Each structure stands twice: as structure tokens, then as C-alpha cells.
Image 1 (cartoon, protein in one colour):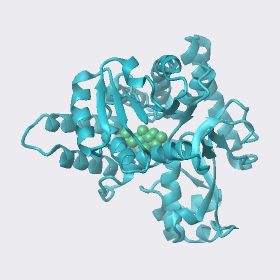
Image 2 (cartoon, helix red, strand yellow):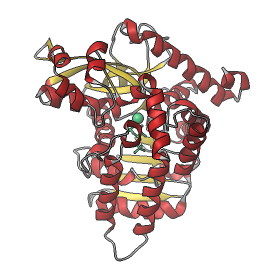
Image 3 (cartoon, rainbow, N blue to C red):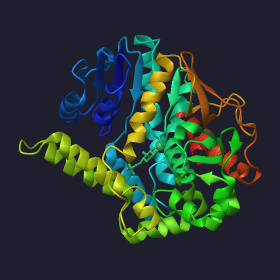
Length: 408
Ligand code: G6P
Ligand code: MN
């Protein structure tokens, strides 16, 4: 089987290649395409080193040979590079609004940049590899996946590691293996809540509400007070901090003096400078980079004083684990339950059928099928609908260039 990665020079490519190669999926070739050829050369060589010997890693400066005949095409691009993220976050903060990759004004700008590019790639993929599944990692994942479906690309599936990371943390708090748990989760990408966890067929979250120490340790940074979570009676993903505590987060960002995008930009620049040196082992250096990046995750936002425990191949591995889970479920027709970003089709009663939502899906050879989740809890329904209305207008603006939609 051939897999293609558009945005193959991205820093997560070796991670993805490593994960895919350590699986039972019969992969023959992983083809990488990027517009940054210097970086593609460096990342391609690193990816080839972590790949298994039977998998050929190829690099391409042209799109067509990269995607031709691929069974899966991953799209993971950042139009304008990491510096565009840092720029948008800085501008937001200069206006006293939190500066965040996918939320608020920076997220809006990112959607306007990403959507036309991803849709153009998808149109070409439809011609060259009509049977390919398009696995979209490009942020903002919900809006980009929505645009792909509106453009007629029905084989597009959006992926985010945030829900499964939360699931693992909650299973850990409950003292149960993740595989024993069924997660009742719903929302939009980067706007999701875990409503219940079932173990042995019974709801298991209730005891947590009266265990403040466990609630405090749930998220990887101190984002929500235990009493707040106990009152909410839902477990939000970390992204809800931008909606529940926007002023605190903004203040923390302004106090830090630089946004997360600026930090990631500096980490990446150091990584690529070192990867150009002959006296440094590239794989070890890459692992150090991953550890540093995951240790800093949500640190500025939460105003935390101590960095997270570094864990190479851990916190960022959500990415490759969930990608592999999707490829396996489709290829082996397993029917695995995976939280993904797909058109709603009635899964969340409060939203339209064509709204892209993030809910558990049954994944098999025919794609990803959202489970019915009913209505969102009354106290989050309004937020869900308002953010979705914003997303619809943003997708419309990005696809048509319509100024009125952008202003709306
Ligand atoms: C999570 C989200 C991704 C996002 C990333 C940012 O993994 O699900 O969508 O891009 O965090 O992490 P960073 O290290 O770039 O701040
Ligand atoms: Mn995400």
C-alpha cells in the first residue's frame, strides 16, 4: 500500500512514519510532498531513518507523482509556516485578545489561509487517486474538513489527538485501561466535552466529581478548578479554557511576553539548525525536540510555573496513534470506535446534518460513521451552536472570498 503526506516536511512527519511503520499495515511506500524543498530533504532523511527497512520513503517536489495511486493521503500543512502562527498570535495579543493557533482571530486567519490550499490539493487528489481516503490534520481541523466536504470530497476525515489524549488521562484517573472504557464524547474540533465514561456497561464518572485531587490532575496543565469541573459535570478538553477563562489565559500570555507559536517557532528553528550538523545524531536530537515541545504544551496558557515532565514520543504521539488507528480500521475493516471530525448526519441533534462535528465514529472499510449522541447538555448547547455558526461563516468566507461572511 502507498501512503502520501502533503506537508511532508512538517516536524511531525518522522513521528507519523515511525508509528505507521511499527504496525501490521502492509505499507510499501510513504511518499512525502512539500513546497519547502530544503526542509523536505532534511525531514525525508530523518523519516527514512525511523522507517522500517521494507518501507520506501520517497520525497517529491511535485504533487502528482506523490499522490498518484495512494490509498491514503494525509494533509498536514501550515500555509505561511510557523511564523505565520506566531504573527497572528502576536497581533491578537496586541489587541488584548488571546492569541491562539486555532481559536479566536489567529484561528480565523489560519482558516482563511488553510482552506483554499487544502481544497485545491483535494481536487487534484480526486483526479489522481480517486479511491484515496483523505486524512486531514490541517488546522483548524474542523473547518478545513468541513470545507473539504463542501467541495465534494466525501472521503475526507478530520483527525485531532486532543479527545483521545483526554480519554487516556480520564481512564488513568479511573484506574482502568483505556480499552475497557467507552467514551461518550461530543462537540466540535477543539470544542469538545466528555459527558460520560462507561466501564462494564455502567457510567463511571460520578465518583470523580467528589475527588478534587483527581480532577486537578486530569488535564496536563492546571486549567480548570476542580470545583468548576464538578459543577460542570462534564470533562472539557483543554481547549475549553479559551472559552471558560479567556481573560486569565490572555493575561498569562501577555505576562509570558510571547505566545506559544513564538516558542514553537524558536524550538523548530533550533531543531533544523542542529539537523544540519554532522556531529549531532538526528534521531536523538529529534526526540529531544519532541520532549521539549510536549513539556511546554499549555504552559504559557495556564501560567504554570513547572514544565510538564518531558516524555519523548509520548505527548505528541497522540498524533501518530490516532492516524494509525484510522488507517488500520479502514484497511482491516475493523469497525473500531475513534473520535473523528466528520459530517454530523444527525449525530448531535442540535446541529445541522452537514456541520462537521467531533464525535466517536465507527470506522470500517466504508469510512467513518458518527455515532448518535443525542442533544448536547443544555448548559453547553448555546456555546456549541454559536461557535458552529462562526465556523460556517468562516468556511464560507474562505471558500468564496465573500467579505460579508468574513465579517459575520
Ligand atoms: C494539540 C492539538 C493540535 C495542535 C497542537 C498544538 O495537539 O490537537 O491541533 O496543533 O496541540 O501544539 P503546539 O505544540 O504546536 O502548541
Ligand atoms: Mn487538534
